[in-house]
Every structure is written in C-alpha cells, then in structure tokens.
Image (cartoon, rainbow, N blue to C red):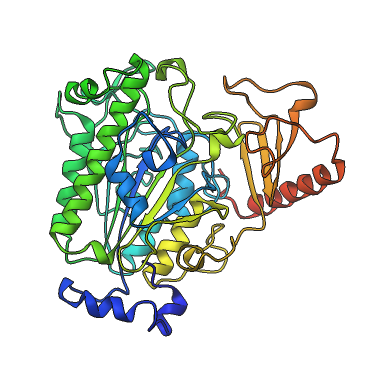
Length: 453
C-alpha cells in the first residue's frame, strides 16, 4: 500500500518491484487511490473474518485474506458524528470540534469549517475526492461535504434515514434527505445501499485514471434494520431481528464486492488502498431492535467507553504492497487513518495537525504501536488505555445506564480480562492515579488546540 514519506525517498525493496509489475496499469504506485468503507453501528464480531457463524460477508472477508486485519482497533468515539469527524480530520472528536452528535435537521452547524479534512489535504495533492452515503457532520454552509473538501457528494446529511423513502423521521418534523451535492433529489423506493453502490461505482469509473479518494459511508446496520426481500429470505432461519441485521450486512458486503470488482475491472486494484471499518460498536437501542449486533467478547455497546462501544473491525488492503492474510494486534485508532493516508499519498501536514499517527510501519512491518496511550471523553464519561490497563470513569453499561458506586471508577487489565468484568481500581490505586493524570494531560492538550465554539 503505503508509500511512506521515507519510502518515497528510498523504497526500492518495497515499491519498485511492484511498480514494475503493474506498469501497464497506469501511474506508478507512489500516489495510490484510496477507498474507505465505513459502516454504522456494526459490532466487532459481525464479520466472517471476525468469527461470526451466522452472517455472510465473503467480500469483506476477502479483504482480510488479501490484506491486514486489526484486532485492537478503536473508534475515537462511541457515537456517530464524533467518530466521523475523527476519521476525516485525524484528530480526536474534541480536537475536531465535534464532541457529540450533530443535529440531523437542515441548516444545523456541525464540524467547524476551519477543520481540515483528509479530503482537503488530498485535493491539494491533485486527488479527485468523492463521498457517498451518510454525512452527519452538519448541513450549514461550510459544514457540508462539498464545503469540507469533497468534489462530489451523493447521500444524506442526517444521522440516519429510512432506507427506501430516504426520510429522517425519528423525531418530528420528518425531513426528506437525499441529495446530489447540495441539490435535493428523489428516488423513492430505491434501496439506499444500492444507490450508494451505484454512485461509488460511478465515481470509480469517472476517476479510474486516478488518483482519487472515495469515502463510502453506509447507513447500515444502523436502524432502521431494512433490507430487500431477496436478502431477508437468505436469513429466514435466524431470529427475526438478527435476520434483519444479517441482511443489512449482506447488503453492505455485496456493495463492497461490487466496488472491489470494479477496481479489478479497471486494473487498478494494485494501486488502490482500501480500508473497511465501523464507526463504533453495535447498539442496544430499542429502535434498533435491541442488542442484535455482536460486540464480540467486549463489555458495553454504542454510547459506552467500555471496549464494546469502541472496539471495531478494521481491514486494510492493497494487493502487492500490504501483506496478505496478516493480523495486527497493535493498538490503533480511527484518527490514525488520515495521517496514514496522507503519508501514503506522499503528502505532509503542518506540525500538530494530527493527533493520530502514521501506521505504515505497523501495517507493512508489524512494528509496535506508535501509541503509548489512548484517551477518550464522551457524554460525561472518560477513559484512557495504556498497555494492558484501561481506566473508565462514569462508564455506561450495555443498556446505556451509568454505573454507580465503586464501579463508577473502573480499572481493567485487558490482557487478563478483555471483557472488563473485574474492577481492579481498589487493588491498584497507583495505576488509577497514573492513568488519571494521563487523561488530564491529554484533555488539557486537546483543549488548548480545540476550536472555540
């Protein structure tokens, strides 16, 4: 995959043989195309390559077989908007000015326009940029995809929409929300994942000579759990809610497969970096049919800073460059993608631009994680991980209820207890103090660099 900054200077062993082998495909491999597939409310365990026995995700599993699969990849937030802001800016949600969810109604502010997205940075390197699907980072002037570095957009601004009417109706007033760039369009009855796929393929077709950056953000498996009957029938043997959930992920898998096939058709798979990940853990919300997603062995769900709310699947593929069929257990975070992608494209950023780290050495050489620690804040909860230890303050349980009493300050040894079931805070006050100081230092640092709202 990755053309590292250093590799651009002296990478004969890494890129030169590959570039020669692919010479007929077009430009050399120093400026790869990039496709990011981003699912919504998907559980850590809800892929075949992650151990699921009842789902069918052969195309996504193919990515794992042909690339690197991370097992300790964290979202920067346990809810939608902050996780998206972090992915696109390379900063924590607080650093990106999006600490919580953005309003789904028209004209609402979102991510501050002065934030610089990876799309904007790649445009400066000559990339065509496109986004399809869910945005959820604001719809006021300057906050839309077209205002945040994307040449083309087809999708919706809200946090979720009905997959057939394309209407946000979870709070009144109901709002139709489907648009091409800033213009509202209507495709009533068309399944949203099919529209997203069509537009993603169109973008690839139009920009196959590259370089391009395509952000494909699905409305699935977020509620409403809707899928075409042909997919629902495939999972009729499962309990009804799990069947709907499985069908939505089958729709995503088909979409991913079509895009990968189109890269093959244009003979550009070898010069395209493809990433697949979820925005955070699966939900237990009643309007999402309850706890039907599988967060693996981890405690907590969407909204929680326990690992079930934060740990997500992440797959990275570029044939001929990224090692095939390998697993990485190093700690990484979604805000690492922006600096990693920028480095792969041969770009650089101003000092302090990113809180994330370039993961090229981890991906290519199995190097240690560049993170000594990770920290989070979300809706009154705080968390910090350092090595095997993780401290969560005011954590929420699987039903999004705050823990009380001694468990309001929860210390877990993730190596011995990945499910965060045993609170060791009383046994290790010195570790609690150290991690508390780490979080305070992180919060102070981020506050000093965060946009003032």
